[in-house]
Image (tube, rainbow, N blue to C red):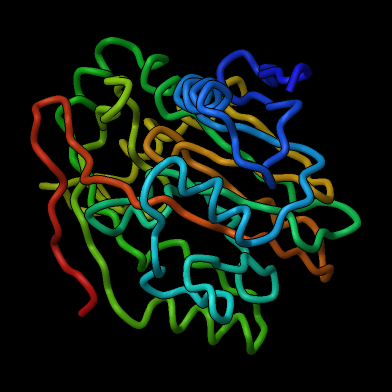
Length: 286
Protein backbone atom coordinates (compact mmCIF):
# COMPACT_ATOMS: atom_id res chain seq x y z
CA UNK A 1 0.00 0.00 0.00
CA UNK A 2 2.82 2.38 -0.98
CA UNK A 3 0.40 4.89 -2.56
CA UNK A 4 -1.54 5.34 0.67
CA UNK A 5 -2.20 9.03 1.26
CA UNK A 6 -4.63 11.25 3.16
CA UNK A 7 -5.19 14.48 1.25
CA UNK A 8 -7.19 17.42 2.62
CA UNK A 9 -10.04 18.65 0.44
CA UNK A 10 -10.60 21.83 2.47
CA UNK A 11 -8.91 23.87 5.15
CA UNK A 12 -11.46 23.17 7.86
CA UNK A 13 -13.19 19.91 6.94
CA UNK A 14 -12.75 16.87 4.77
CA UNK A 15 -9.98 14.64 3.43
CA UNK A 16 -9.74 12.12 0.62
CA UNK A 17 -8.09 8.79 1.35
CA UNK A 18 -6.10 7.38 -1.57
CA UNK A 19 -4.43 4.01 -2.10
CA UNK A 20 -6.87 2.02 0.04
CA UNK A 21 -9.02 -0.92 -1.06
CA UNK A 22 -12.04 -1.15 1.25
CA UNK A 23 -12.86 -4.65 -0.03
CA UNK A 24 -9.76 -5.96 1.77
CA UNK A 25 -8.92 -5.98 5.45
CA UNK A 26 -7.01 -2.89 6.49
CA UNK A 27 -3.79 -3.32 8.42
CA UNK A 28 -3.68 -1.96 11.95
CA UNK A 29 -1.24 0.75 10.86
CA UNK A 30 -3.43 1.98 7.99
CA UNK A 31 -6.58 1.72 10.11
CA UNK A 32 -4.94 3.80 12.87
CA UNK A 33 -4.13 6.57 10.38
CA UNK A 34 -7.63 6.48 8.92
CA UNK A 35 -9.19 6.70 12.37
CA UNK A 36 -6.93 9.61 13.33
CA UNK A 37 -7.89 11.38 10.08
CA UNK A 38 -11.56 10.70 10.78
CA UNK A 39 -11.30 12.56 14.09
CA UNK A 40 -9.25 15.39 12.62
CA UNK A 41 -11.05 16.00 9.30
CA UNK A 42 -14.58 14.94 10.33
CA UNK A 43 -15.44 13.39 6.93
CA UNK A 44 -13.36 11.06 4.76
CA UNK A 45 -13.91 10.35 1.06
CA UNK A 46 -12.85 7.24 -0.86
CA UNK A 47 -12.93 6.99 -4.68
CA UNK A 48 -12.93 3.96 -6.99
CA UNK A 49 -14.11 1.36 -4.47
CA UNK A 50 -15.63 -1.86 -5.82
CA UNK A 51 -17.31 -3.09 -2.65
CA UNK A 52 -20.44 -4.91 -1.54
CA UNK A 53 -22.80 -4.31 1.36
CA UNK A 54 -20.78 -6.85 3.34
CA UNK A 55 -17.56 -4.90 2.70
CA UNK A 56 -19.26 -1.69 3.75
CA UNK A 57 -20.51 -3.34 6.94
CA UNK A 58 -17.00 -4.61 7.72
CA UNK A 59 -15.45 -1.17 7.18
CA UNK A 60 -18.03 0.64 9.28
CA UNK A 61 -17.67 -2.02 11.97
CA UNK A 62 -14.04 -1.02 12.54
CA UNK A 63 -15.32 2.23 14.08
CA UNK A 64 -17.69 0.57 16.55
CA UNK A 65 -20.83 -1.56 16.90
CA UNK A 66 -23.21 -1.13 13.97
CA UNK A 67 -26.69 0.29 14.32
CA UNK A 68 -28.93 -2.74 13.83
CA UNK A 69 -32.14 -0.99 12.81
CA UNK A 70 -33.32 2.56 12.23
CA UNK A 71 -36.36 3.52 14.33
CA UNK A 72 -38.45 4.35 11.22
CA UNK A 73 -36.66 3.87 7.89
CA UNK A 74 -36.83 0.78 5.68
CA UNK A 75 -33.75 -1.42 5.26
CA UNK A 76 -32.31 -3.75 2.63
CA UNK A 77 -34.00 -7.16 2.69
CA UNK A 78 -32.01 -9.57 4.83
CA UNK A 79 -29.54 -6.90 5.92
CA UNK A 80 -31.19 -4.67 8.53
CA UNK A 81 -28.04 -2.63 9.13
CA UNK A 82 -28.12 -1.30 5.53
CA UNK A 83 -30.55 1.53 4.70
CA UNK A 84 -31.16 2.39 1.04
CA UNK A 85 -31.18 6.19 0.77
CA UNK A 86 -33.50 6.41 -2.22
CA UNK A 87 -34.61 9.70 -3.73
CA UNK A 88 -37.97 8.12 -4.54
CA UNK A 89 -38.57 7.59 -0.80
CA UNK A 90 -37.34 10.86 0.64
CA UNK A 91 -34.83 13.61 0.03
CA UNK A 92 -32.95 14.85 3.08
CA UNK A 93 -32.42 18.35 1.75
CA UNK A 94 -32.04 19.90 5.17
CA UNK A 95 -29.08 20.13 7.52
CA UNK A 96 -29.30 17.41 10.16
CA UNK A 97 -27.44 15.12 12.53
CA UNK A 98 -28.48 11.48 12.01
CA UNK A 99 -31.18 10.41 14.51
CA UNK A 100 -30.40 13.34 16.83
CA UNK A 101 -34.00 13.03 18.02
CA UNK A 102 -32.91 9.93 20.00
CA UNK A 103 -30.83 9.93 23.16
CA UNK A 104 -27.77 8.45 21.44
CA UNK A 105 -27.33 9.81 17.89
CA UNK A 106 -25.13 7.81 15.53
CA UNK A 107 -21.38 7.88 16.09
CA UNK A 108 -20.87 8.08 12.36
CA UNK A 109 -22.38 7.15 9.03
CA UNK A 110 -20.95 5.55 5.91
CA UNK A 111 -22.55 6.17 2.51
CA UNK A 112 -21.81 4.23 -0.68
CA UNK A 113 -22.91 5.15 -4.18
CA UNK A 114 -25.22 2.57 -5.78
CA UNK A 115 -27.21 4.43 -8.44
CA UNK A 116 -26.36 8.01 -9.35
CA UNK A 117 -28.24 10.65 -11.34
CA UNK A 118 -26.62 12.19 -14.44
CA UNK A 119 -26.25 15.46 -12.52
CA UNK A 120 -26.82 16.87 -9.04
CA UNK A 121 -27.31 14.97 -5.79
CA UNK A 122 -24.14 16.17 -4.06
CA UNK A 123 -23.68 15.64 -0.32
CA UNK A 124 -22.67 18.55 1.92
CA UNK A 125 -21.03 18.03 5.33
CA UNK A 126 -20.52 20.87 7.83
CA UNK A 127 -18.10 21.09 10.75
CA UNK A 128 -19.91 21.87 14.01
CA UNK A 129 -16.62 22.20 15.89
CA UNK A 130 -15.38 24.88 13.49
CA UNK A 131 -18.75 26.63 13.81
CA UNK A 132 -18.32 26.70 17.57
CA UNK A 133 -14.80 28.12 17.28
CA UNK A 134 -16.11 30.89 15.01
CA UNK A 135 -18.61 32.14 17.59
CA UNK A 136 -17.84 35.52 19.16
CA UNK A 137 -16.93 35.11 22.83
CA UNK A 138 -20.19 36.68 24.01
CA UNK A 139 -22.30 34.36 21.86
CA UNK A 140 -20.22 31.34 22.82
CA UNK A 141 -20.90 32.07 26.48
CA UNK A 142 -24.64 31.93 25.78
CA UNK A 143 -24.41 28.78 23.64
CA UNK A 144 -22.43 26.96 26.34
CA UNK A 145 -25.48 27.02 28.63
CA UNK A 146 -28.22 26.18 26.13
CA UNK A 147 -30.03 22.88 25.57
CA UNK A 148 -32.15 22.10 22.53
CA UNK A 149 -35.09 19.76 21.99
CA UNK A 150 -34.62 17.55 18.92
CA UNK A 151 -37.63 15.81 17.37
CA UNK A 152 -38.37 13.72 14.28
CA UNK A 153 -41.49 15.85 13.79
CA UNK A 154 -39.43 18.51 12.04
CA UNK A 155 -38.39 19.39 8.50
CA UNK A 156 -39.50 16.08 7.00
CA UNK A 157 -39.79 16.93 3.29
CA UNK A 158 -42.87 16.31 1.14
CA UNK A 159 -42.12 14.80 -2.27
CA UNK A 160 -45.65 14.96 -3.61
CA UNK A 161 -45.63 11.25 -4.54
CA UNK A 162 -47.50 8.29 -3.07
CA UNK A 163 -44.29 6.49 -2.14
CA UNK A 164 -42.92 9.66 -0.58
CA UNK A 165 -46.16 10.13 1.35
CA UNK A 166 -45.95 6.59 2.76
CA UNK A 167 -42.32 7.03 3.83
CA UNK A 168 -43.10 10.38 5.44
CA UNK A 169 -46.08 8.85 7.28
CA UNK A 170 -43.88 6.02 8.63
CA UNK A 171 -41.19 8.50 9.71
CA UNK A 172 -43.73 10.53 11.67
CA UNK A 173 -45.80 7.60 13.00
CA UNK A 174 -44.10 7.78 16.38
CA UNK A 175 -42.87 10.90 18.12
CA UNK A 176 -39.34 11.15 19.45
CA UNK A 177 -38.09 14.11 21.50
CA UNK A 178 -34.72 14.38 23.20
CA UNK A 179 -32.93 17.26 24.91
CA UNK A 180 -29.27 17.66 23.93
CA UNK A 181 -26.68 20.23 24.96
CA UNK A 182 -26.25 22.81 22.21
CA UNK A 183 -22.51 22.46 22.78
CA UNK A 184 -21.43 18.84 22.85
CA UNK A 185 -18.03 17.59 24.00
CA UNK A 186 -16.59 15.00 21.61
CA UNK A 187 -16.07 11.77 23.58
CA UNK A 188 -12.75 10.93 21.88
CA UNK A 189 -11.11 14.25 21.03
CA UNK A 190 -12.62 16.37 23.81
CA UNK A 191 -13.41 19.02 21.20
CA UNK A 192 -16.59 21.09 21.72
CA UNK A 193 -18.99 21.46 18.80
CA UNK A 194 -22.45 22.81 18.07
CA UNK A 195 -25.07 20.04 18.11
CA UNK A 196 -28.02 21.45 16.18
CA UNK A 197 -29.45 20.77 12.70
CA UNK A 198 -32.99 20.57 11.40
CA UNK A 199 -34.25 18.23 14.11
CA UNK A 200 -33.41 20.86 16.78
CA UNK A 201 -36.70 22.72 17.03
CA UNK A 202 -36.65 24.72 20.24
CA UNK A 203 -34.51 25.54 23.24
CA UNK A 204 -35.22 24.10 26.66
CA UNK A 205 -37.06 26.66 28.79
CA UNK A 206 -38.11 28.75 25.79
CA UNK A 207 -41.06 28.88 23.44
CA UNK A 208 -40.61 28.15 19.75
CA UNK A 209 -40.83 31.83 18.76
CA UNK A 210 -38.07 32.68 21.26
CA UNK A 211 -35.92 29.73 20.25
CA UNK A 212 -35.81 30.07 16.48
CA UNK A 213 -33.78 33.30 16.22
CA UNK A 214 -31.09 31.94 18.54
CA UNK A 215 -30.95 28.55 16.85
CA UNK A 216 -30.76 30.18 13.42
CA UNK A 217 -27.90 32.46 14.46
CA UNK A 218 -25.87 29.56 15.88
CA UNK A 219 -26.68 27.31 12.93
CA UNK A 220 -25.44 29.98 10.52
CA UNK A 221 -21.93 29.62 11.94
CA UNK A 222 -21.92 25.86 11.28
CA UNK A 223 -23.14 26.36 7.70
CA UNK A 224 -20.56 28.97 6.73
CA UNK A 225 -19.04 27.95 3.36
CA UNK A 226 -15.54 27.66 4.79
CA UNK A 227 -16.87 25.15 7.37
CA UNK A 228 -18.42 22.85 4.75
CA UNK A 229 -17.26 20.22 2.28
CA UNK A 230 -19.26 19.41 -0.87
CA UNK A 231 -18.85 15.98 -2.48
CA UNK A 232 -19.88 15.26 -6.06
CA UNK A 233 -20.60 11.55 -6.26
CA UNK A 234 -19.03 9.17 -8.78
CA UNK A 235 -19.54 5.41 -9.16
CA UNK A 236 -17.45 3.56 -6.56
CA UNK A 237 -17.46 6.41 -4.03
CA UNK A 238 -17.69 5.83 -0.27
CA UNK A 239 -17.69 8.42 2.49
CA UNK A 240 -17.83 8.37 6.27
CA UNK A 241 -18.58 11.35 8.50
CA UNK A 242 -18.28 11.82 12.25
CA UNK A 243 -21.87 12.42 13.31
CA UNK A 244 -20.67 13.68 16.70
CA UNK A 245 -19.21 16.87 15.22
CA UNK A 246 -20.88 17.35 11.83
CA UNK A 247 -24.17 17.95 10.07
CA UNK A 248 -24.99 16.93 6.52
CA UNK A 249 -27.35 17.80 3.67
CA UNK A 250 -28.38 15.88 0.54
CA UNK A 251 -28.82 18.36 -2.29
CA UNK A 252 -32.15 17.85 -4.07
CA UNK A 253 -31.25 19.11 -7.54
CA UNK A 254 -31.40 15.95 -9.65
CA UNK A 255 -35.01 16.32 -10.83
CA UNK A 256 -36.82 13.02 -11.50
CA UNK A 257 -33.63 10.94 -11.84
CA UNK A 258 -32.85 7.99 -9.59
CA UNK A 259 -30.31 8.35 -6.79
CA UNK A 260 -29.59 5.53 -4.35
CA UNK A 261 -26.90 5.43 -1.68
CA UNK A 262 -26.45 2.64 0.85
CA UNK A 263 -26.10 3.84 4.41
CA UNK A 264 -24.54 1.96 7.32
CA UNK A 265 -24.36 3.71 10.69
CA UNK A 266 -22.26 3.15 13.78
CA UNK A 267 -23.95 3.16 17.19
CA UNK A 268 -23.23 6.30 19.16
CA UNK A 269 -23.17 7.27 22.80
CA UNK A 270 -25.19 9.78 24.80
CA UNK A 271 -23.95 13.36 24.24
CA UNK A 272 -22.42 15.23 27.16
CA UNK A 273 -22.29 19.00 27.56
CA UNK A 274 -19.55 21.25 28.88
CA UNK A 275 -21.08 20.96 32.36
CA UNK A 276 -20.81 17.16 32.29
CA UNK A 277 -24.57 16.64 32.05
CA UNK A 278 -25.94 14.05 29.60
CA UNK A 279 -28.76 14.23 27.09
CA UNK A 280 -32.15 12.99 28.26
CA UNK A 281 -35.30 11.63 26.63
CA UNK A 282 -38.48 13.68 26.73
CA UNK A 283 -40.65 11.41 24.60
CA UNK A 284 -39.79 8.17 22.84
CA UNK A 285 -41.91 6.36 20.30
CA UNK A 286 -45.35 7.28 21.56
